Image (cartoon, rainbow, N blue to C red; front, top):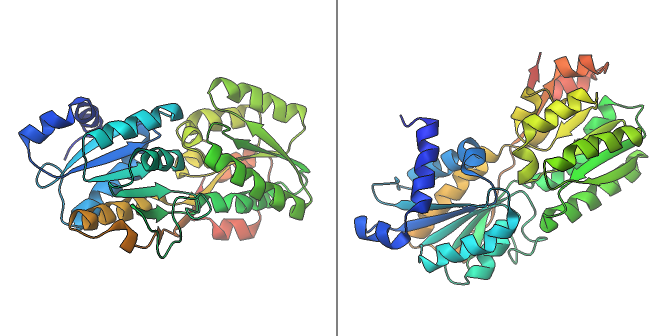
Length: 329
């Protein structure tokens, strides 16, 4: 079994090796993998499931397929250049993780098949014409994670029913996701009779200011929106939530709750990664992306940190305890 550190090191060396050199060494079809995040962030949640899906479709890296990885390291402005680099290398398929990566890949090529893995509604985001008939050179998988934002606000309201002011943390540099998440949360807040404060953060240095402003606003809780940058900083955000005694719900990944956050609620993205891998394999076998309907991964996970809830003095409703997939005590 390949150890995690060795695997990530391998990803780095693969990305550093020129595509032409790899082609001389092994005349295999090459898949380009473009992500807004880093190799370390994506190792468990998307890369491993993606490779599993490829294997299910009959492709094993190093045997009958190669993969070229390009990581933006949460610096979204790097995505266009990374996408163009993959296109110049004439890869057979491009896997893209995140909405901004989709936009970069679409701008770079209209002919190379693109398989996306996103949390948005790809029709509303303008990626495809429809889920059933995506058209052009794109198809992929969506977790519809962005559409779960109103539910996170509802859950926080149940946990902190006396709070009248709630904060929503969004990344303004992620222009595709920030606006619809803010709009959906605002509508939900009006329905629940809450005042919602939209707070912007795009660097780690913004986090201290955000939590200080929550105290000034006398906010009773915080919802962290779905964004690659936030999910890669779950430990820091959980620590700040504990320090400022702020009930906080994270948008994805049980790791946020495991690190001390009050709750995480979102799609299980590992399933989406596997589905993207199977689609890549089908395209390598000759199927056209326009003929492959966009798949929806609908597996949702709720993780509650009961220890944190008790420390915050919260009484957790029985309905939430029964609904939680995991309760950390």
